[in-house]
Amino acid sequence: MARLAMKRPLYLGLLLIGLAGCAGMATRGLAQSLSQAIVNHDDPATVKAGAPAYLLLLDGFIDESPDDPDLLIAGARLNGVYATVFVEDPERARHLSGKARAYAGRALCLRHPPMCAQDRRHFDEFAPLLAAMTEADVPALYTYATVWAGWIQTRSGDWDAIADLPRVEAMLERVVALDEGYDRGQAHLYLGVMRTLLPPALGGRPREGRAHFERAIALSKGRNLMAKVEFARRYARLVFDQAMHDRLLREVLEADPREPGLTLSNTLARQQARQLLATSEDYF
Image (cartoon, rainbow, N blue to C red; front, side):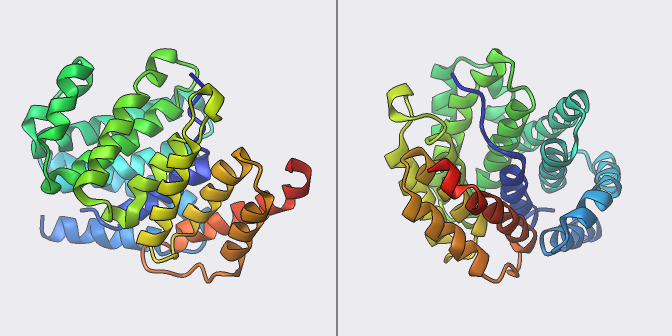
């Protein structure tokens, strides 16, 4: 199986959007305000510099309220973003992604106790547990799936870690079945990436991937620019469709990145679009 090919800007874009929906009472309100400040910022360098302080703050909130699923979800998402996007040291990235996964696992266990320690169950036992989950479980389920993907990314040379990808995919499929519009269709975007990691001859499913990308764009009413970037990068390049590739990227560059809950992700998407468009002629 190929290594997980989710690039750092993609993972940041996906999880930062999720931060806007996280994090009782005064503590949750502060966490929510900070999350909104991050996702609505238009300077990634400022976010990179400020994220460690927010991580420490969230850790303190979680220590005070260790059984608050909303705080655990917020902690999982930010630790996952920071580990996979900003941390250069591989060992530190693995440590922080492990912390993110632990927070997410606790949140999932609190929200749906039958899923406690689900990653140690045989897949035949795991699938029925997923089928029993309801729409109320989506935030915790989605968070665990996405930070698990990040955990795998930081261990891309570990075949045992990569072998967990089908579980992540199954969790995201369940999210789509329960509430495909959650986080503006981000589960569709993850599935689009996963199904275009490989060409058809090696087991990839680009047609399914294209459908997921298109659905993610539709669910965000076209405002999730990262969805268009990944559509171009993953699908258009895989099938050698330069016209589609360049059109999608130009749409990103022509769009206003400012959008509540999406500004930082869109800013990063525009940076990626410029880089991809600049290499279009060489690639095709």
